[in-house]
Amino acid sequence: MARKIKIPNERLKRFAREEQKRKKDIRSKRRYYLIVCEGEATEPNYFEGLKKDLPKGVLTAYQIDIAGTGRNTQSLVDEALRLKDVYEKGSSRHIDKLWVVFDRDSFLLQDFNAAIQRCANADIGCAWSNEAFELWYLLRFQYYENAMSRQVYKEMIENHLKPVIGKEFRYEKNSENMYALLKEHGSLEDAIRNAKRLAERFAGRQDYANHNPCTTVFNLVTELLKLR
Image (cartoon, rainbow, N blue to C red; front, side, top):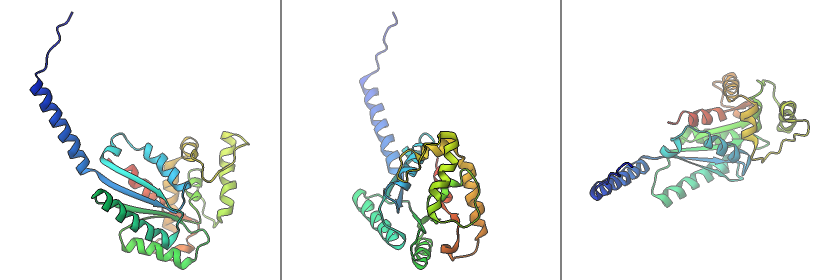
């Protein structure tokens, strides 16, 4: 029987102190992301799924908080700045990157355009979609260039997924399973490439409400995937 090696108590205590210091150093260097979404479920559910899929260790180096607000355009930017202030005062930590996620929908074009411009002026990340977030889902399957309304997204998503899931499939806007379904049956690489291609069509134009279809969600997704 092998003899157990006894480790001196002083060495154990020193190791414990060093480990505690190491963990404290990691926490102090941790960077904070705050993602504030227009939707209370659809977008937060998607980004929570993506967050769990990030490379091992990323969530040790970064804290990523996702909030669904039910606000839109200008009021969403206001709420994002308020939440940033609440987070920073409550934790005494700086929010390193603030993002907002919202749609064009049927909101006034001047409010939509002004919200995007406010974000650019205030160094707030802005992942907007025209007309709706579901465009980001569709771009996983196909490139779309013709203008479309948000009313047709549901049917188009179902048309892509029914052949692989079953004809009984129905798209539910607030589903917690959409990230997993899109991951399994769609292509994130295609979504990023297609979204970039759409954005390039409107390069240099600031009439964002007229950029249909278009989504800049790929900017936020790409930034999260690059975290190390």
